[in-house]
Image (cartoon, rainbow, N blue to C red; front, side):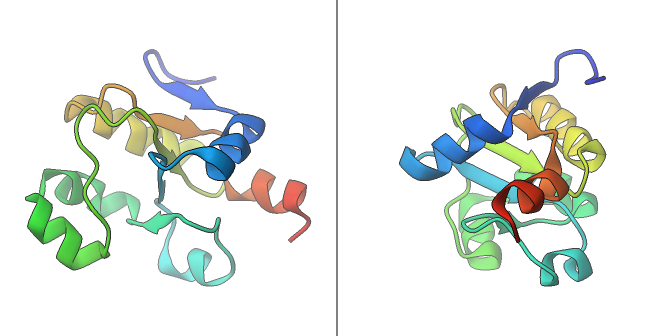
Length: 119
């Protein structure tokens, strides 16, 4: 189902990274309305239509806008997610095109996360 070159990450793998990794950079590409209903703790909200611009920003600009340090191009644990996987996949593809070689998509999305987390 994933397009060629797009790496996916499973719920279990993401859960493990959230628990132990300091390098995880989790990006929620859903709309503000969706995020307001619930989000994965630790995620950074960057709507899909702004991902290109966000990842092209200078680090200082990025930090000022999102309150977190911009991930480097070789960030080992850059993960995008949306509600059901499609927009996360699109964001991951954009990130790859911009040079984020290890970017991955949490294909289960917030729908799977909230179900498994019982939220």
